[in-house]
Length: 136
Image (tube, rainbow, N blue to C red):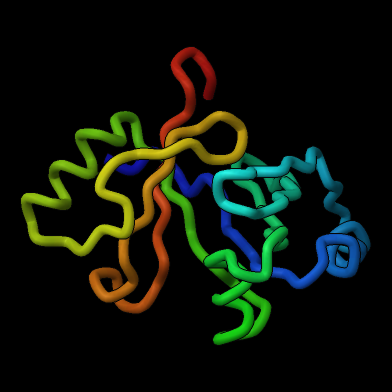
């Protein structure tokens, strides 16, 4: 079911404050995108076949802002790319896995995404993503 680790999401108070560290380590910001539906700005830094996503809340009432307020900046989630997101969600639902998203929604880069609740994953927020058809 899992094709690869697509990216690791890192919650930040400010992308511009955090990005210089990763640039110092030899990475570069490939793109920055506003995902209005989630009230988040996303900076993508490629790392081989995976990526880091630096996440910055654009609304203090967003789920990311609440996460940072409760837990502080740092690792937010791990994203696994899957071939068939609808099928993966159906399989997880059939095994009584707690889902945050019952149905896929639009994420950064035009991908379909859905989150699995940390209570079913040993405390780690897991995102599943599916690339748009014809894009890997």
